[in-house]
Amino acid sequence: MRITVEQLLQQYAIGERDFSGVDLSEADLSGAVWDKYENPMGATDLNGINLSQSKLRRSRLVGINFSGANLSGADLIDAKLSCADLSGADLSRANLINTDLIRAKLIRTNLRGSDLGGADLTEASFCDAILEDANLRYCKMRDAKFSRANLRNSGLDSALLLRTDFGDANLSGADLYSTYVKDANWRGVNLSNAMLDCAVFEQVDLTNADLTGAWDADVDSCILFNTIMPDGGMVSNNL
Figure 1 (cartoon, helix red, strand yellow):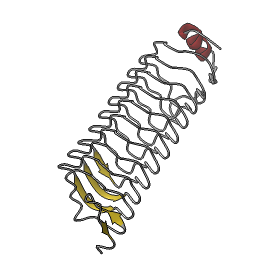
Figure 2 (cartoon, helix red, strand yellow; figure 1 turned 180 degrees about the horizontal axis):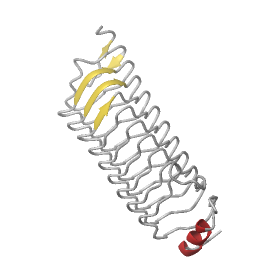
Figure 3 (cartoon, one colour; figure 1 turned 30 degrees about the vertical axis):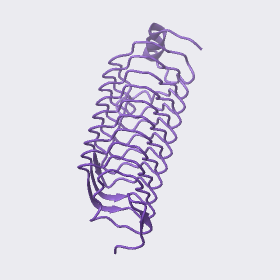
Figure 4 (tube, one colour; figure 1 turned 60 degrees about the horizontal axis):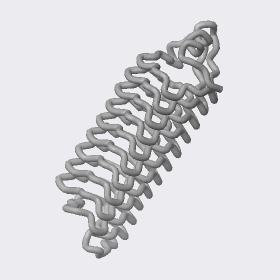
């Protein structure tokens, strides 16, 4: 159902909180405030909403249900999406520069070609997400989960990855130049042909990982068990 921004605001003002499935594509909602934890009238449900190509810069969308939503091409620069549920949503080619995604759920979310440069992904879950060709440069990823995610040809250079879980993730062809990875689970990760120049790996579990063709990989302090090294050789056990 197509509605205008004015209709949305009118319905919101009289207490409506369920906007699931409505069409607000190309709408300008910059600076909107929908905060689950500060709204005494209940959380806003935007499940399945169409916000493709919309403008949501500097919006406060804390704890909102965006599961299955269409946010493809949306402008979310400097938006606050902490604790939001974006599982199964389409965020392909979305602009998420400097976005706050702390503790957000992006399970099976499509982020192909999106720009997350400088975003805060602390404790966020990207399990099974699609991040192919995405930009994650300078992101903060403390305790973030990317297990089984597809990050093929993505850019993670200069990102901070502490205690991250990239188990069985696909990082083939990814750019991890000057990335700092510490105390992390990267078991079964695919790093084939990845750029690892100046990257720092400290106490990272690379059991069953594939580093075939990875550039300038320095993984001396990592756990290597059945790990395929850049030259194609296998390290059976370095413990």
